[in-house]
Image 1 (cartoon, rainbow, N blue to C red):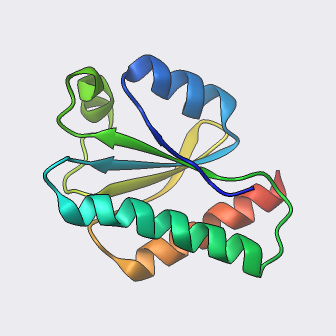
Image 2: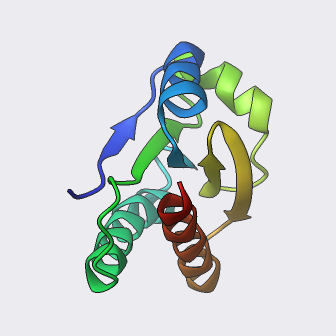
Image 3: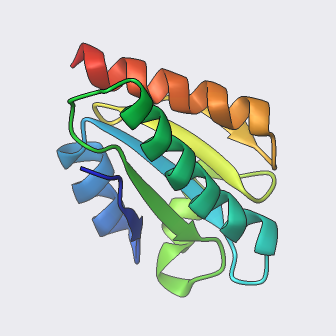
Length: 123
């Protein structure tokens, strides 16, 4: 099962999906005008799915939740996390964030993906 890219529309969706339902989840702050952040979303999904397949990992997919930094309904999520740059990425396990990085850092992205896969295997 491949990962899904799921746009979040408001704080209630954030709470019900990441804080309650997802065991391991990735949250990415983007903006419609920020092409590098939009590229990171698709690059991260592709790399996450490839690494899962390469490791022959049988756990469920790790979904990628996307918050548009400027979308009106998302202001509460942005205020809660206050990302200092775009893109900004958080890794959650059982509703708590356990890793983060900002910008287009391929090394940090791969490190976060590795941690996500390890966390997913441990659950």
